[in-house]
Length: 410
Ligand SMILES: [Zn+2]
Image 1 (tube, rainbow, N blue to C red):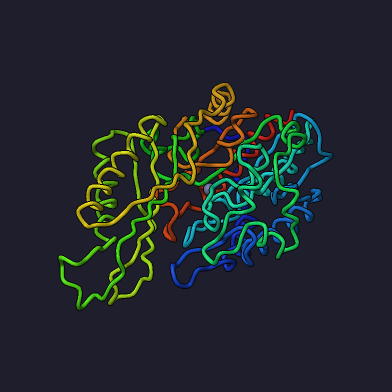
Image 2 (cartoon, rainbow, N blue to C red; image 1 turned 60 degrees about the horizontal axis):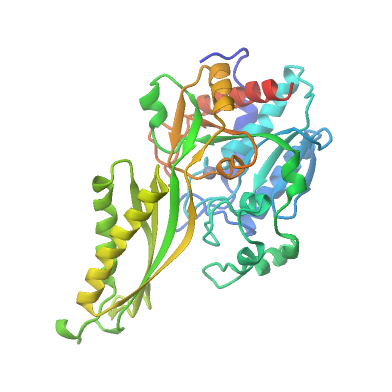
């Protein structure tokens, strides 16, 4: 890789990182649970606003709960970078915050280099990228771009039954303003998101590369499957009398693993399962499980879901249970702007790699030239407390982002 200047300041990175380290720790799951409009996410927003103001950036919230920090006046053909502050339940420290912290420190580095942007430049933090609280990923960017209906979003509920509208109002955000924001979208000329790599494709592409440039995001979707049986006593119910929804649920888990080998390039996961009522000595009356499927092709993704649902249905019939399948989200494959990708890859001497993870940059790429930078993650582990990137690599990422912004704001 080629970088003109020494890596970003390690002390400033360490101090920013230590300020975030205590916010939103999840004592039960490990790692972090930071979700839209909860206490920890609100603290992180305050932290971001303060950091941006300290750097002389003008901070504003948009109509959809996203935060923007402008270097200079907002305006047309803006270069925007940023990421998200929320996490999955029990997530790692890097997914999201690394892109935000790197953007702030890239501003410092650009100032050290004497760069004065000729174009408007902003750092953005997007609402509920992970869908960890309300179930739908990329809420902030999809609302802003009009990719999702605001009424639908306002009615989404968290696991305590609280709606997006009520959760927003509780922290002083007016949910009635949510919805497509074409005027703001029209000001974005280019969007670049720096992110910790999730997986190890960078290592396969080039074992020495610290930063990669994204080429595409696989098609991905989420489905909620509800299996209903008959709640009953675990000790007294004869096998023949059981209608145990956990049996078809188990078939779903096994089918999700099986399709990975049947459909090359596919991944399918059941990472969340809720038995009702959920007692050790109780046969569940119903089980809800959530299926996450990703593949290059939306058609193959649909075939995979059909295959898994058929396996659950067979088992449900044998067990005397019924089945309901609800698609919560589906996003087609996203190709990032190839010209921009090549430009950044040449600038940084970085390989170009795809990803199976969804991102706000994928949402924006339908509207404006968008790109992603991935920072090496040695184990590939993500969405887990074990997610990690070495500090030295994060500093290289900051310099790479500064190089990219310097090139784009000319
Ligand atoms: Zn992320």
